[in-house]
Image 1 (cartoon, one colour):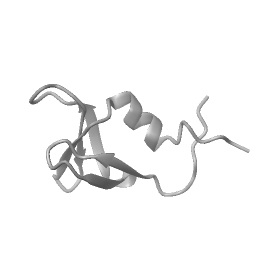
Image 2 (cartoon, rainbow, N blue to C red; image 1 turned 135 degrees about the horizontal axis):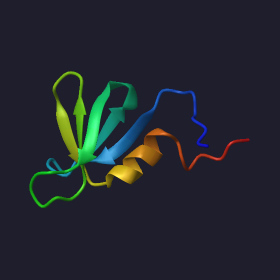
Image 3 (cartoon, rainbow, N blue to C red; image 1 turned 90 degrees about the horizontal axis):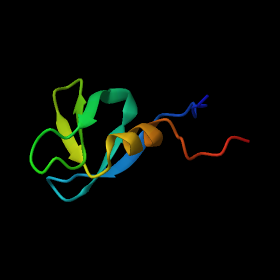
Length: 74
């Protein structure tokens, strides 16, 4: 069972297209999938606003980041 941190899920990822860091609020994420475009690297994240970003991390790393999977409880 995964426990979740109850704060706002904000994470910083590297934007592959712009080459800059982007701070992403997990509450605004609509979907994320392995990037189907370009060189098929990274994860395509879409937002409810219609915006999207392709980050360098794979989709498993994105899930772990938003679930605070590397955070020790207690």
